[in-house]
Image (cartoon, rainbow, N blue to C red; front, top):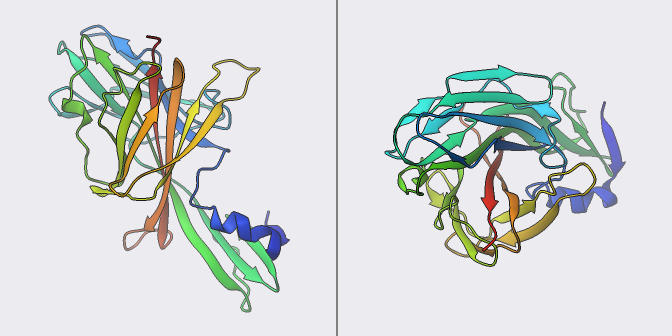
Length: 267
């Protein structure tokens, strides 16, 4: 159903559409951030408002494992449920850090237009835009969620960026994070750093009663963030970025959503 609000009230929202939203943010959560050689690992992928309580399954994307040597393998077993997608995979004997990824998921197409001082936002592609309306936005969501697990000691091989799409590229190893220390990383799009990019870092309460905490940050001129980890827990870093979609896409732009789940230990 279309939603209409007075234009004056909508303006602040329009200016913030590339900023992180609270509702239905994607995530990838492993059952453990540490594993043994040849262990079967398991991850949950979902969209949630409260972390990490699943609400909408991520869907049938190409879940992958990047090994310590940089090789990429599809996850062996992916199952779809109503509120979450579950993927399992047997690791090889190699020790080091593994990068787990959902792969890209294309979602809904959004359009909004202004007409007579009011803004209407629709998701139905068959809804025609009125002839006297002015198009404000037309994009399709594209979501990727990732995390890292480690067998033995952390290693850097799986941290190398793919150079495709929106990514968080760790400088500090995400398998070696402690409260009171800094987590340094770079935000990139198609291999290039994003300066002045908004990033949210959320800490999960991991229970049904408390809400997660949120810190809003901005990358520097080289696309970097240096975040002091306040306390132990499970965290999620969220980046949203709008960019042109390739020719033939369902919309002229993609609304990229990237999340990285990581664990912070006590000193």
